[in-house]
Amino acid sequence: MPPEVVLIVVLGSICGALFHLVFRGRRLGQLLARLMVGIGAFAVGHLVGRSADPGLPTIGPLHAIEGFAVSSAALFIARLLKL
Image 1 (spheres, one colour):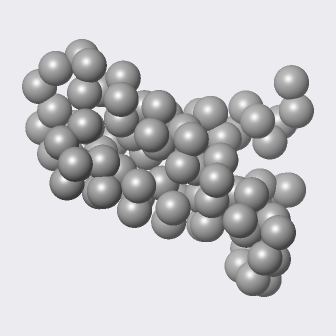
Image 2 (cartoon, rainbow, N blue to C red):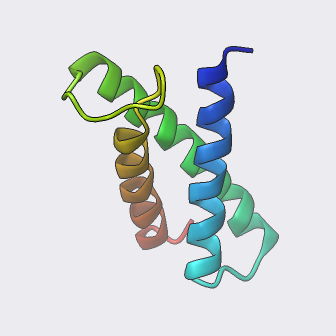
């Protein structure tokens, strides 16, 4: 597996888990949903950053800043939709 994919899964999971802890998720289903949203949105953010190339710092080939931004926005939207 490419290192990019591993970092996307790890950093996306961290985003989802931290969001779950900060906003006091109560159920296992909420945690799983937030992990999936975090990973998926982080991957989308990375792909957007790679295609747009805004010139922000990267971790090797990984566009982490864009990934964190999109992941955070998606997690807040998911919270508003009560996922």
